[in-house]
Amino acid sequence: MAENKDATPPIRPVLPPELLEAVINRLNPEAQAGREALLSCSYTGSALLPVAQRRLFQNTTVSFTLGLERGIAHLVEDLTLGSTGRKLLDLLNQSPHIASYIRSFNILSETPPWRLQAPSATVMSSSPSFPLYAIIPKLSQLKELSLTGPFWLYSWRHFDPTIWKNLNETVKKMTRLDLSPLRSVPSSFLLDCHSLQELRMGSLLIERNAEPSMRPALKLLSVRLEHENQDREESLFTSIDAPFCPFDVSRLSRLIVSINDLSEINRTLESCCETLERLELPSLRSAHASTKNIRLLYNPREAPVIPFYDKVVPELGLLC
Image 1: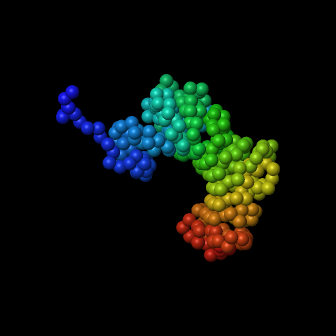
Image 2: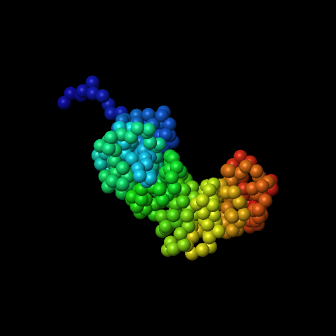
Image 3: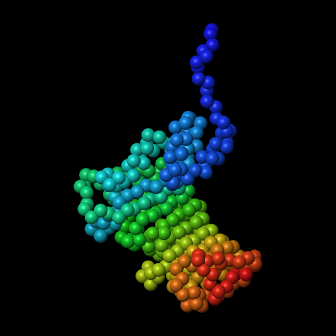
């Protein structure tokens, strides 16, 4: 049989697959250039397709409109404004393997338009057909869940409870949870989060009748306590030894807290002084006024513990 001299030889990668994968994993899918590069990699052939897809979808954001109806805040899938819930659900139904690539999932809320769209173009979070509720169970490898956007406009009790009911089982499996925009999150919502290591939240409402079966040992805790009297966030720090406290803070390595009276966190600092490596106080306005009630602690590791955000507070000193 005559040799076909015009036949194109198969293209072989110049770099070994392991090195190509390492390069792809360094691309930033959040930057336009990085995303375009990953998309190009996914078109080159079957060998790079799963690597590029895994990087593209590792951190996934889904966006909804935030709307108010009869005093209740809802997430709204608005098909006329480009909400992405339905698009993501369709993609996961067509390519189910992509769901296993999603490790971090962000729910983004956007402010509502001035003029409401026709009901036929929207699906509200109170509806069983709201796409988020079909997406979440598909994410079998999910480790991080976050909320971003103007959730802070309303406290927890003002939101459609269907949202939290559908997220509750997923929250229990997370290692990282970012609820920073939410105010007055009830402690019962965070019960049995046995794998939780890092928690960011706006404020926590401790419920005395909600006792955890096991308290997760947090490594990072971030709390914004800007309305302490209104939402009673101070109970988070004053009840750390109580049986209804949902967390173990004795092994914290990083604490980020905005609070008016720093004496509230003395007991927390005493509890975690052997492991705490970083204390951040981002909202301090007057260092002298804000730190005079906090005690200096002895740290057996003899390591400096308090590098601040943009300032070192001399009155507070170092835990050493």
